Image (cartoon, rainbow, N blue to C red; front, side, top):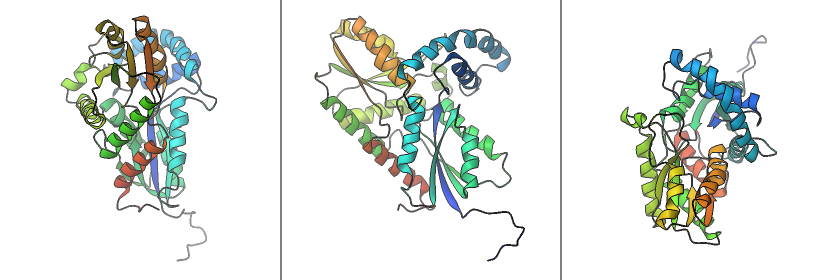
Length: 335
C-alpha cells in the first residue's frame, strides 16, 4: 500500500525487549552519588515513609553525609567502562541482540539514573517496536525492585499517544533454567578455589521485616531459591540478608553478623554467593567481596571467596534466552 505523500514516516513493526536493572550513579563522585541517591531514596516503593516526614531527613541529613562515603565505595569497584552494574547489563543486552532474529530489538535501562526507562521505551518505539517486553532482572519479586521498575515503565507509557503492547517478566526465582545456571556457576567457581569451604553463604539483598508482614513475597522467594539450589548442589547453604539501612528491623540473619560469627563456630573457610543479583554491582563487589572479606578474616577466618553472579557468562545468557523466550511466545519465534 502506498502512503500519502504527507504521511509521517512509520518504521516497520518490531518487538522490543528492555532489560531493566536497579541503577547506578553516572560517576564515582559525591555529586553523582547524591543525584542517584536522591532519586533512589525518594521512591516510595523503596522508603515507605510519608514524604512530609521522610524528605527533610533525606535532604537535611542523608544526602549531606552519605554520598561521600558511597562514592568511596564506588571508586573501589568502578571499571574503565563505568559502573559494573551498567557495564554488565549493557553486555547482557548486546549478547541477546539477534537471539530472536532481526525483528526483536534488545535494549537496557536503569530504574534510577541512566539510561532511563522512559528514554529507552521511546527509543524502541521510534525504531518500530509495537510490542515491548519489560524485563526487570530481579529473580525474586519485591515491591521495591520489580514493582517500581514496572511502575516507571507504565509512567512512561502514560505519556505516549501510540502505546506499544506490553508484557512484563515475572519473577524467576524457581525457574529450572535459573536454578541450573546457578548450580553450574557455583560448581565452576568452587572448582577454581584452592580450599574447601567449611560453609557456603547465599546472601540476598535485605528488606525491612515489615515488608514480609505486609505480604511482599520476597522473603519466601529467597528461601525457595536457596532451597532449590541446595538440593541441586547437594550441599548445605547458609541463607543471609545484606545491606541493612536505618533503624528498622530487617530480614535476618544479617550477612555481616553471620560472617563475624562463623569463625568462632569453627567455620574458618567460607565461600559466599549472591543469587538475588543478576549482575555484579556495588553490593556484591564492595559490600561482600571487600568488606565481607575484611569482616570474616578480622573475626579469625582463614580463607574467603566471593563467587561471581551469572553476569553475561555463557550459562547466564543461556538462562536469560530461555526465560525471555517463554515470555515472547506468540510474539516471536527464536531465530
